[in-house]
Image (cartoon, rainbow, N blue to C red; front, side):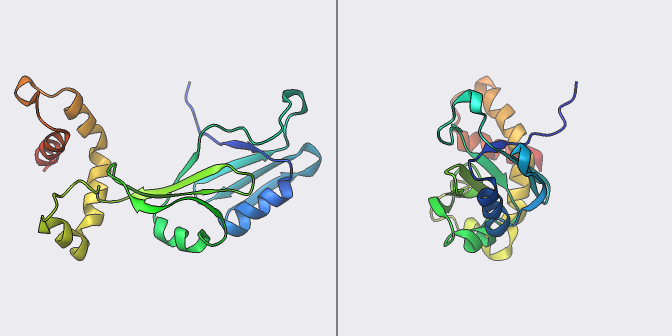
Length: 183
């Protein structure tokens, strides 16, 4: 058995209003809308989202999703500039230690949408280390982001299977070890 794709289906009492939010604010296209069924299918680039009316038998009274929808994109800064004044903001755009530049917004029904792109982790370079500044100035940070994305699994393996000699090594040392061994 092979999974093919995962599409969130969000419930909304006003599908037309929600379609407008996703198409006008986030640039999705409504691929299909069946009004009498209370269902719509939206897409943008390589991702898809479905909308549906609440199921009467479940007794929905408000959106009840207990997580967030995470969208990875290639330019979170551009999307942030395009939407920040048109939405309710959960968290401002910023770089995180886990190597993602992210922001969070709410859609018109209160669902949390997180948007992110790979970046140089905040903690990759020590304070006062000019390599971080040079990397950003030379565009090397984009290459480092791609490298870090490819190495994520390897770093996890190195961190979880550290030899006895590295038993007391810090996470930063393990990451440096993984980066050095990849070169």
